Length: 92
Image (tube, rainbow, N blue to C red; front, top):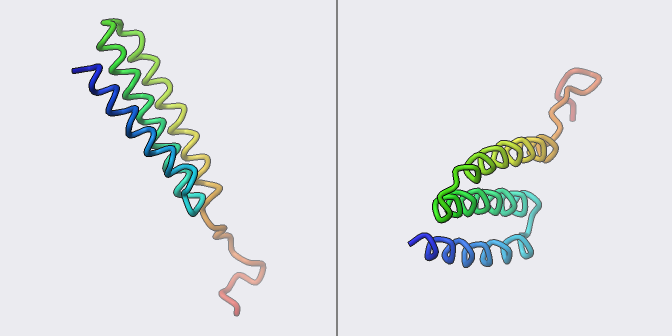
C-alpha cells in the first residue's frame, strides 16, 4: 500500500511539473513549488513508514518548517506595495 501511495505521488508530481512549466503567472508557479514541497514531505513520511525509521519524520517536519518560511518570504515580495505616498492621500 505504501509503494502504491509513492507511485501516486510520483504521477501527481509529474502533473505538477507540467503546471510549474506552463503556469501563466508567477503566483501559479509559486503554488506549484509549494505543492511539490508538500509532496516531498509526504514522500518522506511514507518512506519513514516503509523503513520503520522515525528519523525521516523529523527530517520531514524540519523541511516543512523551512519551506513554509520560504513561501512566506516569497509571498511577501509578491504582494503589491501598499505604502502611503508622500502626500499621504489617494491622489489621482
